Length: 145
Image (cartoon, rainbow, N blue to C red):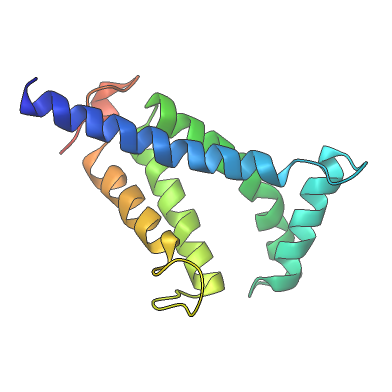
């Protein structure tokens, strides 16, 4: 196997992994609790964001309602390689907003030894800058630099 093919397979695996993580994260926010509906689940998440984000309430609600579908759409775009750079940029911006909101746990007392959002952010940034590799739907906009 040529070195270029190995690199393209690595790009593909990274794209699929990051994309699926965001698809699952977005879908999970819409899963109803108990006997509730999808609307109840999304409303609950949006209200949680509005109550905890360092934003004015209307902006927090907007962000809370917009986040799950944007996570799913950007994740799917990354998985199939459709405008990979755009999708990866959206994901990097979401991760940056999460790190700003929650802070960066450089050395947490419990849990992972390092903040996973930092690692995911660097991966998304790499895909945003370098492209999604050769195995994409629209090669012209996703071709590695």
